Length: 179
Image (cartoon, rainbow, N blue to C red; front, side, top):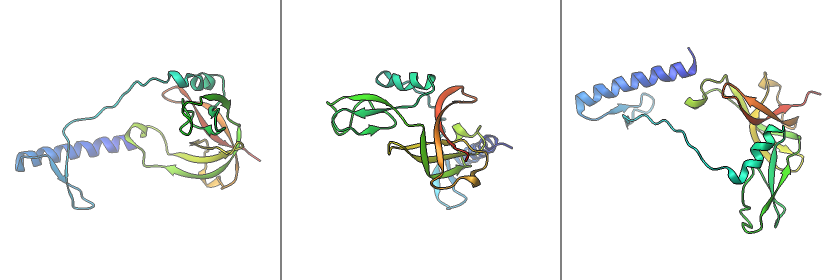
């Protein structure tokens, strides 16, 4: 049974229990089996979809289509901002310019994600890591690897543009450099 199927089964069980509690005591409360704490079970399902403007950052998304990962650089301070920002927090009036991120970096840390948020539960377990790139900027991203036990602090990685399936959108990931 997949993680999503397990989550769906658990939620169905919780809903049935909360309905029984509502009939019995008049409110949808459940007892957390781990802590014994009484919790409110909300009867509304939250499905979140949003549309936000990325007009000031559209060059970032265009560059992904060209196989490049871009950052912004504050014209006033020289600070490289990644993920890119439309304005520099230290000098908002100074403006920013686009710079290409280096391809190579060094893996600092990582973790294997095996308990996923519901919206990611259709993915197999995945690795998220932080790499310090050649320009001294840290990048947080998924790490493309089949065997996380082979990852080592300080190992060389490259920043690559990939198509994330099944959604089919372009994003960036870190990939260990064999050698």
